[in-house]
Every structure is written in structure tokens, then in C-alpha cells.
Length: 366
Image 1 (cartoon, rainbow, N blue to C red):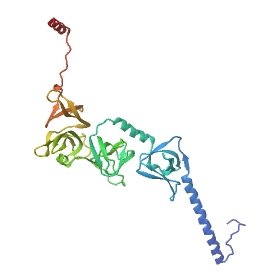
Image 2 (image 1 turned 90 degrees about the vertical axis):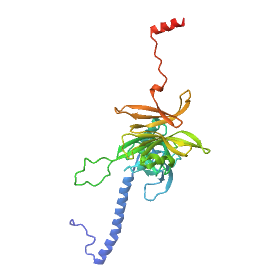
Image 3 (image 1 turned 60 degrees about the horizontal axis):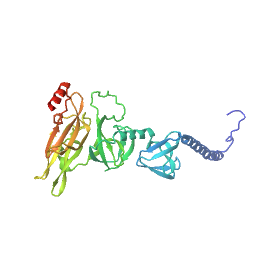
Image 4 (image 1 turned 180 degrees about the vertical axis):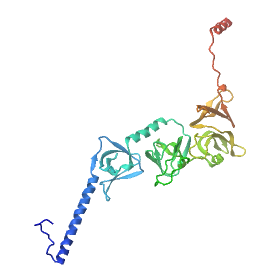
């Protein structure tokens, strides 16, 4: 202690020292608490957001807080897919103050929001697939996020409820990213086969589009038909027509099936047509084709073939050949008979006449 400075505890009795320390400690504690509060507030200082910045809610529901604190009042509620105006952010970027469509303002966590770029990406998917025919209708097994790309770590925006019906449009597969773990001293096995995930691009009843894990949806198909999958994975089904039996209309189906594993190079490797046997009152296989490198989407409808056949149910699938060339195959169903429509069955093209043939035809008319 410098010469001349005064020690307030010098020459004090032990009891006096005890009282001096007991008074000093609460004051020091308050100062420390005040210092911690100042540091906390410094971390929560906010930065003004860009003018006109918007975001979209990615969770089913979130509360708006009147303050960034452990204890807060509820200032409003926002729901999945809602657009909000971004007003400011905390300095650490964890919380955002927003204004919802009902002019309610409050703070919410940044991780519950998607940017305008992510929203634009989902709008692009919707435009590109608006006219793609549904390949099947399925129900979700649990609450699901709809992803922008077929990958677990891809951006997501919309959410589906458990048991919600969606239309399946396309299939894709991706390599599953390995789970993060502590580094092992042993060298990783570079020859180990990667794990894959199969995904479906789906469209919900609100016409929202996104990718979901295929294993998390179940195709909505009568058990009388689904039981004939024989261990294969049903990826698409179409009602070709109906037949009358016992006063009710019974649908007849086209099923597209694939290997029962994720990561197959083709969307489907076989097709089967099931017709209804009116005498035995059960489904039977009317047509089957295997070893296909099929690509979704497929389509089904009706076409007028003229003459005795008239209008018949048809379906069209896309198949890659050994040279990776993609082509369409059309089939027609007449009763319980399914037949591929070949180019030779189409109306023959009219061959243009030569000048000599034209002159000969004119002379014959004379």
C-alpha cells in the first residue's frame, strides 16, 4: 500500500473488521450483478433491419414476446407460412422483432423464420410442377417439414400435420449425411457403402409444394390391391376405369412398383394392371411388365381409337433404355386386355407425291 494511504481496517478490533467486511460484500455483490446486467443488455442490443425486409414462419405456431427476457408477455401469435415484416434484430442475431399481418409486434427466435429467397424457391417449385399429374395420394405418418431440396439439411418452410393427405408428384434420392460424432482413432472405412434416402415431391391441399422423406408417407390404396405388391414398394397408382359389381363401381388400377430399398437408380422397375373379376369378386393381374428403368411422372386417361374399339383407358410411362435415352410407352386397356400402342398402329403417314405421280393421277382423272 503506498505511503500515506489510509487503511480503513488498520488498528480496528476484530469485531470492527467483521462489520466492515459484512457491509462491503453486499455492495460488491450488487456491483457485480449490475456489471453482469450491463453485459447482458449489451448482448441484446438490437440492430435495425433492412427496409422492407420480410420473412416467413417455419414452425406450426410461435408466440411473439414483448421483450427479450426469460419472463415476458405474449404480444401475439404467428402460424406456419405467414409472412412477417422484420423490424430489428438483437446484436447476436438470435431474436428478431417482427410485425405480423394483424399488426401485432413482438420478438421471436430467428430459427423459426425463413428468408424471402427460401420462399421464392418454394414458389419456383410450385410453378414448375403445377401441371404434373398426381402419381398417388398418401397420408403422412407424423408432422413433417416440406424441404426445398430432397435433403435432410435443406431449407424448409411449410409443415404438414400427422395424417394429412398429400399428392405424390416425383421421386428423388440423396446420400444421407453421416451423423456427427467424436473422431475415432481408427481410420474410417472408405469402402463402406453410403446410406441413401428416398424423397417424394408432394403437393398438399393448399397447393403448397415441397420434398418429404418417402418412408414418412403411406400411399392411400385399398388393401385388396396393395396386398399384391409382393414385397415391392408401390410408388404410384392410377384408376384406369371402373366396373359395376353388386350395385357399386369398383376401380381398376395401374400400379408402378420399385425395389423395397432407398437409393434405387430408377423410380419404378415394374408395372402391373389389376382388373376386377366379376365372377370371383376379386382383383387379378391383367398385365405385368418387369425390368424397367422407369421415370416419374406417369399419366393415365382415355383416348378414342375409332372403329370398334372407340374410347379406351390408356396410360403412358417414361422408360430409359440401355443408352440412357428417355422415351414414352403408351398402353391401352380393352376390357381385361392390356396392349402396348406401337407406332405401327398409328395412322400411316401420307407420302408426298412426285411430279410424275401427280401427272399420272391427273391423266387417270381425265
